[in-house]
Figure 1: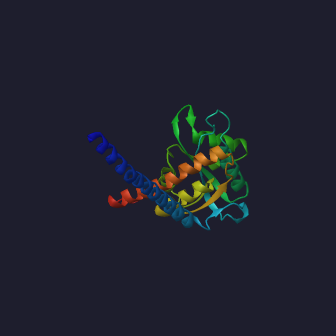
Figure 2: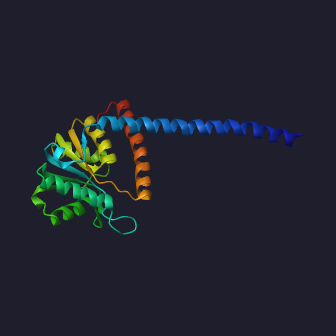
Length: 218
């Protein structure tokens, strides 16, 4: 009888735990959707695909990524960002380029790789600045403001990344627009990166909330 009673109790508890799990998933989905919508709406009208429509800024901030994909081939996110920076510079939409990314060691140097690619495409080295401490998008925006003295920027990355960077730039008091590099259409890569972006947008608001609670500003 005791065994039967235990089994009955387990069966009663199972639906309750299932409901908790479903509500948790639903709540997380709603939070992610709200964060995503706020970031998108904030960037509306300030991200450009057409180079002719991009307003002029002295500096274009290229957000870093690895030049190589995990399989050792070229990382198309990197290639397309370099394409975009080259187009803007040669169209006279920016006067110089700030390359911000991770330099974890001599064998991993995102800004250096971006510089070499742009110089090879005819962008003068004297028009290029390097930020080796752009470990996160927030760092890149803050260093552009605090280290390189920029109060206005054209941010160069894929649209999903530009939208989040613009949200951060607004909170940092930097007047910015975004120029969209071509996105990657390989579906597995696209799904992985865009799923990660949803989480990054949630973390953005968590970080802002923590800063607010501590009385800090970006």
